[in-house]
Image (tube, rainbow, N blue to C red):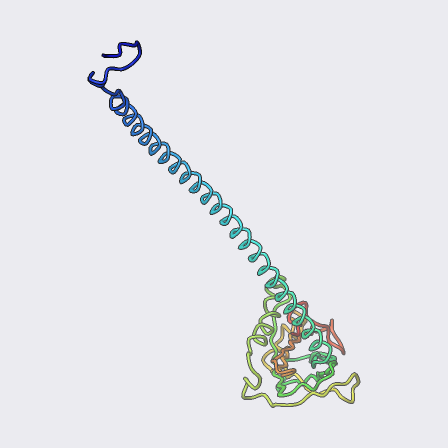
Length: 264
């Protein structure tokens, strides 16, 4: 007897094929697609992260460059400040040394040049004019030498010509770069002092040919030049003096020339 109750499966009936294999195929493809999508998204995220990192590094590099540049500028300014301070310090020290030397060194100047009068006729012999020199400083002038000379120029000459004649001997004096440069000069020491007792007595010689008839008649100026070269505080110094005489105009203490009087 067979049981024909409804709902009871027939044991001999063939089993209904399962639908799971068919369903698994789309699921597998979808999973692969998702994996590919995931990889793409992951790669994009990676590239995006790389770009962000690169941008961050670039910004950081720019900032570091700015910091380095600012540091370099600050360092340069500091260096300039140090250099400026050194220059100011050196200048101050040099000024102090110069002031010290100026206050204590030897200073040579002429006191006067005295000529009673030019002769009434061209002389046969040279005329000697006494010219004392004084050291108004505080240190002796050592290795000093005094050279002198005389010349003349017509009073009708222009001022430029007269001044050029006066200036010429000063230029010669200051061209002497060392003491004892003139072999004819005698090396002396001029001691400091502000009175005649310490003055060094010297004279300027007027050669006979300088005083001709034009000089006798007052048509020429007669110039008297002197140059003192000496050493003080280890430096060579110079003093140039110029006096002039004119017949009938200058008697006794001679006046200074407009040019040719200078000391360094």
